[in-house]
Length: 193
Image (cartoon, rainbow, N blue to C red; front, side, top):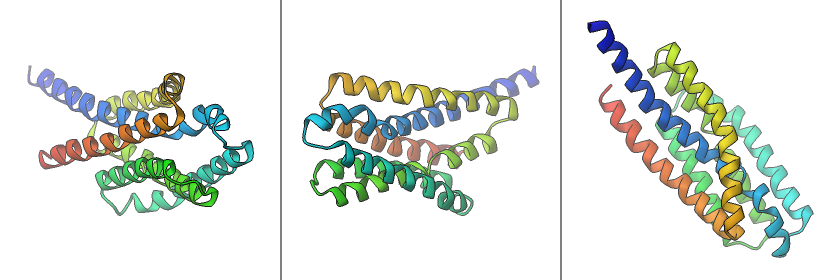
């Protein structure tokens, strides 16, 4: 009887942590795909293929560099701080992108977007592995794979019904809201140990 209660408690904890981490990671995948799903509309709005290609290339280079840098930082900085910083950096960069016309500034801002997104996977996986038993951690990591499929789908759905500027803005809002929610929930769980 006592063992079943402990199993239920572990499952409940894993479900809560897993749901938060998967939804957070899905939000990052939505943000990661806004440029690609919006590019056709952006071309009609004065952007060129070269300009979009340059912005996209620098974004992914910043993401790759961020993976190296943030992998090291993730061992020293609290997970919730890394996640909220990454989500806020990404969301605010997408909003700022809307208010600038200069290619170099747009490229730099979108590089910040990529760098911010690179702050998420490591800390989220660390949270899962340190706070759930291995059986549940494996199942949650399967959900991470689903985030990689669902995020682009959701970004595409936004682009199907919204102007590219609203795609950027709504994705940024989702990302910032997830940053606030993740921080609050993880802070709450941290206090409960």
